[in-house]
Image (tube, helix red, strand yellow):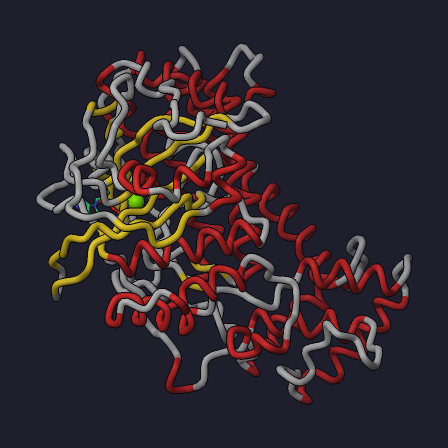
Length: 496
Ligand code: AMP
Ligand code: MG
């Protein structure tokens, strides 16, 4: 725990890398910062004193207005494939890495301020962020963490007391973001595109040590990193699919090497099941639609593999062969993770002969009947062991249409062949099938209340509700309900 009353001490392992990895730069101070919310639990886990963070001095620090003398803030360089096209020169355009914090287990976490002012990579942007996107990222990233999905975290949201100009003047804000690191596939692509093999090797060694130390004892660090990232991303995207989460902007600069979800710009959870769902206002071709996410992750990992070719092997032909062989394992990793997750959602301990068909039929029914993705699975948990008076039962909130009856009978007879206690199975299904997710229309309502009326109460209520996504509470019924026709949100905006 940092000493009370002092600015927290940070580590600077990334700043120790050569200067061409970043621009040394302090945040641009803001006029009148005010804390909106501090994540006390996360603060404690990172050895920070929540009382100090909630003080006026803590707010100034979280806004980037005070930087300790020995600190080495920076904006990181990276590149990226955006919607399929390569941009060799991206980099943090509005985020400053203050440094790193260590948790009680000795793991290192980046602390980054998003909206902290312009950098070398701002490309004419103001380096700021409107309030809405900051609150969205806080809400959704913390909900994802509560759902057990690897993700960047929100340490705090602070309003800046400044106005930012978008299509209209909007209140400005800063998000204090925490991640295992902000190293992206695009970070590797940056040095690869410059043919800077020395930096590439340094980056590989750094990322492997930091994120996959168990794999670091190897004579081919680049291959070990590629395989580890591949498996982490396969696992991550399978979790997205199992929750109906649509990232919306799966560019390679938005995919972290550590396998955590990052960049909650145009993301959204699907309501009615439709595999072609797209929310992002800038994704006209549906490249990042729900059904395409695993394929895009695969494509992104192929970009990573290609960028690593110069350090995979001295002989280019062998390097390409190693890269290809590694990338070819993605589908198997994804399928294994996805199947395991689906089994948990459906109450199965393993797959039997006809299970694949049973699952296919379920998804076909969900699509035909446009049932709510989240509540369909949640309702299955009720039906796995129907019992009068079950306090978790959502029958008053949501039931499945009659078209499901035949399928349900088949699935229930399949469950009867499962070993184990039905009550324990149901409890496990409740854990795998949340009832509260950040519904798009609820998120929009919260952002509007804060942005247009300065009312943060709905934001706090929703954050707190989403911290226990599996726990049904009829009192919060309105936060579990799918949108009605007039409430449906069709597009989300990056809010840049
Ligand atoms: P994103 O779509 O959030 O992944 O951002 C793509 C790139 O644009 C990143 O390099 C961002 O840092 C940069 N960027 C986004 N918004 C701004 C802004 N308001 N000012 C400066 N740079 C920005
Ligand atoms: Mg980004």
